[in-house]
Image 1 (cartoon, helix red, strand yellow):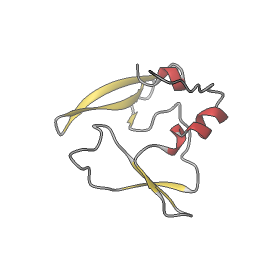
Image 2 (tube, rainbow, N blue to C red):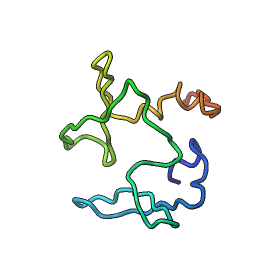
Image 3 (spheres, rainbow, N blue to C red):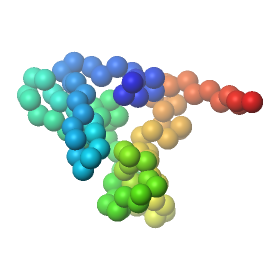
Image 4 (cartoon, rainbow, N blue to C red):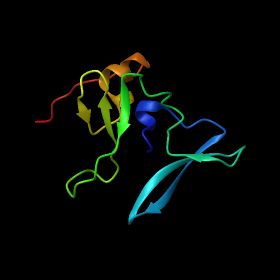
Length: 102
């Protein structure tokens, strides 16, 4: 569902498309007015200043779609987008719930 449950619908003029890259289908976001496309999800906004995307070689056990980000202050490297961390989602008004499966 293209993260619609967390980020909402993709708004006009944007449209998501998937392209084959190295045997994987990766998302690209197409601006239907200008015809330009981007790997950046327009719903996310800018990456927080203390984070930058880092180039890490994908390992065989990594998820298919992965991006690594490094915290420029602490040096911490994470394999997810900091804009999708729980605190960042809550700041956007997403009501997160915790539940336990038995």
